[in-house]
Length: 157
Length: 157
Length: 157
Image 1 (cartoon, rainbow over the protein chains, first blue to last red):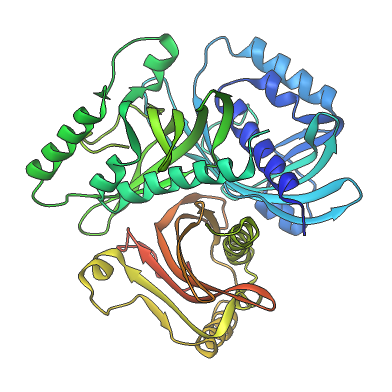
Image 2: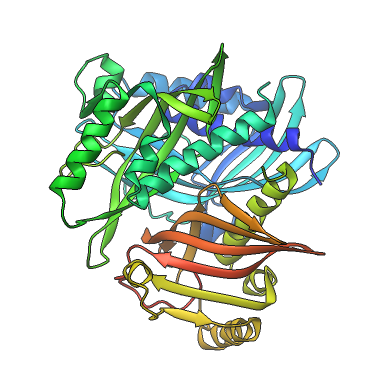
């Protein structure tokens, strides 16, 4: 049985994850990862077949930093806003200081005219570690069910 | 660190909020607010630009009461049913007896023929106070991402 | 006040419920029910009018077993994948070893080409009992708001 405090802290980590992305606080979002991290977005079909193709792959925190810099320079105007709904986190196991956790998400987008729609849904399959600064993501794999996404994928999910 | 019991009680408040609206228990919903309360619905664009335009504004509980009476008299037949999905609540801070909290929501609607669709999504930015009768909303601001809503807004979100 | 541990265990039960269905682990999903269970899917209109018509009805665990066997034999190829978003569980009351609980859900589906959409949303109105093996469903009623579902209903919601 995982301690209640650890569970709630991991819940908070996921809530912060979604809220930072939704508010375009990408720099705060970055600080939810440890240095030695992996972030990837994978179509569900590929994940189930064990295929290595990803929609996005950052193999350490510097690659995430580069992506944020690139996003900040490329998009002078916000072309959409995101909204995450994230399910309760399932803690699947603990090995040493590392927790294997999963959660489902649905993400909606709205454009500048206030028109909104469902953008993506899927599952986070993650590894969380507790640091002196609270829980952080060591690995985050976004498995996308609707991988035939109509718009170009640029920002994290 | 917020006490576990306070967190769970605030979670329950939000769950009741959605469930009462979904079941058209508007009078029960009203009792989730203190007398000296503010309820407003604001387009995300206006919220970010600091513009004062609202889609709905009730500056105290009597104004909420009036709205409920009006809804009960105006709509003899239910023309739609709502369903709220509300994210885990983020407790952002505590000042005295007041908690600053946020949560994301998605709201779906169905008509009398059972046809359903996404209606609204956005963020609740709220102030919660603990009373002798448990936690209540002192202020609730519904920031709507998809503010170009296709149907007329009459009931609370 | 329900004990924190019981609340969290019921939360976990619902999270497992959705995750097992989403991953097509129907046999694991079955083990979330006690032997003497009822599972039914009901249109919201019928539930409110007290009409007995159901979209699916299994009056004990053997009927659920039969349905799973049937699904395994009938569908040689997966024609869709599901994704559940389930709200925080509302514990409405406790009588003996039985908890009356409710939660909202939204379920999305994707096809083999990765095209996804909202499939169903509604409310679970359930009875949960604690066994030696943790909490289980004694009764689960899925009340569907958008009961005019465009695709044939075959798998549980």
